[in-house]
Length: 290
Image (cartoon, rainbow, N blue to C red; front, side, top):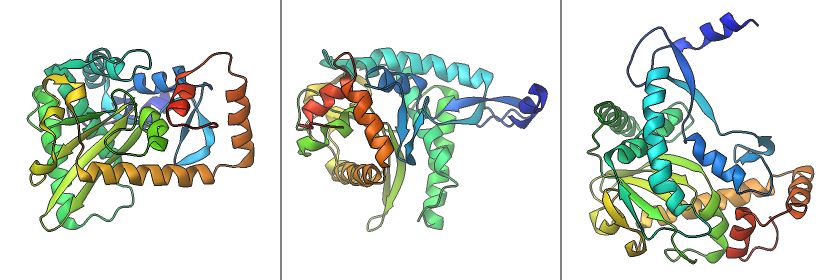
C-alpha cells in the first residue's frame, strides 16, 4: 500500500472543528505524556491493556479524530496540564501540597472526557434511549466548551495523595490506584435519574457528576483555582464503587494472563537494574510480586 493511499484512508471530518475533507491525525484519547510516564516508571518498556493482557504495547490507544490544527491546540493545553497538575501529583519523590488550576488545564481535562467518551459510543453497552440522548447532550456541550476555551461543566479531582490507605479503600489496591490509566465511562442511575462521567490517570481520578449528587461531593476536590490536595478527604460513593469494580476487573484480567506473559513480567521485573516506580507501588500495596 503506497503512502498516498494511506493518507486518503484518514481524510474525513474533524470531530472538533467539523472541517470536512481534512487529513485526520492519530490522536491519543488519554494524552501521550501519561503513557510515557507509565513506561518511564516501569520495570519494562511496555504497556499492557486490559482488553488483551497478553499483548505488549509500545503506546496507548489512538484514533483518527482531529485535524492537525485542533490536535495542536489541545496539545498545548495538555502540556500545561502535564506540568501544572500531573507531574505534581504522579510523583513518587515529593507530591505537591496544592495545585493551581488554569482554564487551559480545565479545557484539557474536559477534552479528555470528550475524546474518551466519543470512543465508547459504538461499544456494546446497556444505555437506554434516554441515556443516549443525555450522553449526546453531554458530548455536544463539552465540544462547545472546548471550542470556546471556557469550561462551565463542574469537574472534580480525586488525588491519591500521601500514604495509603486512600478514602477507605484497601491498601492492597494501591498499585492499581497509583498506576492504572483509562477506565473512561459514563454511568446512569434511576430514582432519581442522574449520571456521572469518569476517567483515571496515575495517582488520580477525574469525575463529572450530574445534578443530584451534591451531598456526596467533597467541594475541596473541585478542579478550579487553588486545590489543596490534602484537604480532599472523601470521594462519592459512586466513585468508590466504580474503583472497586475496576479493581475486580483488573484481577480478572490478570487471571486470564498466559503463563508465558507472567514469566516474562517476572523475568523483566527481577532483572531490572534499579528501583522503579512500579516497584515502589508494589511495596506501597504490600505486594511481593507483580
